[in-house]
Length: 341
Image: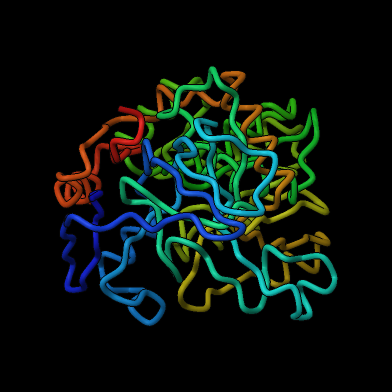
């Protein structure tokens, strides 16, 4: 028997004994060590994604573990190998897939949302989604590779270059990771955040962070850029005010990168877009190359995983972990699924 956390609707998670699923052809079974809780998991708990999640559901996709069993037809892997997964399963046939954009497949199965996820002790997945890990990378740190891959993809799509100035609006976990990854390009990075605790965390990570209610951010950015403005603004907060602020901060031909999920349409200053020839860039999930770069950054310490992990909670206490994250004060909460025992 193994243990699995199940979302059953109505803001409720239960942990139960379940039978492990044997690895079939082309599959591996993973002993899951850690699974991170992300904003999407919180949305699921709040019922906001019940149209996609089929209850009872095992959720979770930010994970690390070791291969426990290999099914027929799987090569290049061995029992005991440390791995994470890129939790995307695409159709290969839709217009997006046909032109190589499989990560935004029209019929994408996001594993851990649309199908069974990693918040369990034993998890069976297609071998094709595995991402190998260095043997000396701590598995708790490796659970941050998926959100780091999000940040890598966002920064890569922005075309941010050394010597440019980037502004990150929002210092939640993804905003902090974007700012950290952006610094590795040689750019100057400024983070905007309303919440005092998040500002403190950003400062501890060595980031320049401003309270937009206390500072004239536009004047600050002009001063830092010789009156030019930011080359890139990452909108990570999801607020309507941030979208309006973003276009005001951008330089001529600046790039606005829309990271946050905005569930309702927002007002955008299209005159500013026209007048300064601004670009608006959408970003969603990641590609395989982003994962490999994320592994490199976490393994090399450029992404300070240990400083971002604020709490590790046993699988049996998963409901309390979600409550703690909702209460604020934590950056990244990990569920110890027991696969590294």
